[in-house]
Image (cartoon, rainbow, N blue to C red; front, side, top):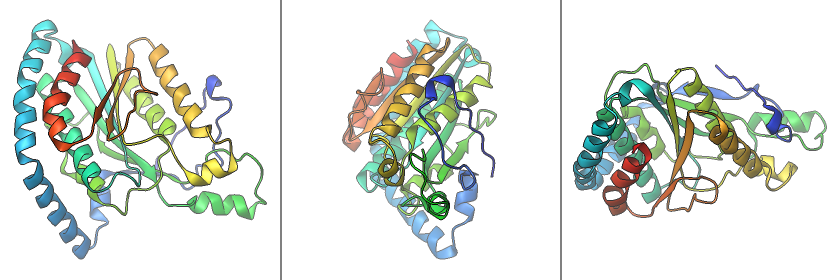
Length: 287
């Protein structure tokens, strides 16, 4: 396990009961844990995904060309000055068509960024378990102290780091098609984590793009704290990013309006929307 957390002054109301059971893992390692039968199922899901999205992928790529040309004409050095972090919500509601749309959006954003030549990272976030996992059991064993703070084991997935020179999204992003991985979503910590990593890249311009299908929810945490505990923390993290020189944040909502939280937001409700609205939105983010 490789984990860090820094609590900032404005996060004074946010706390974590324990990080002892948190997990950070690569996307490739998650794939490696699959049994032969499970890997066969995933391969079949990927084949189905590629058939269902082939036309949309092609159209999105073509519709992106004029935007990419315009950005590069406006800022020929964007590849040297800009870094992006893509943060993907792996919540339990991201299943079926929503998972397909989200996975396609990730791929198309990565394709766009690769052609711009900017450095970018991809992170997925969810929880290790439903109902609080080992963190909650530890809390119960110690007498259920009041207001414990975040009360679940988070799972953060490293799909792609900025040092990766490959083009596009790695194959391991197909993990988001696996329903058994998709659980609770504790957005604030994941977005904070991604932004902190961008700071280490020393880019002049930094952009966090969140892909989500809902508000932060973890029943174990919310049952033992204020009902807006996770929401308020995410708001604080977003505000901190917006106040940091050289940093911006945007979001793509998958069948969900994320505009209440994020200053720049796009909602994608259907697969066909990806090719028609995503290229223009990405173009506006960089022009």
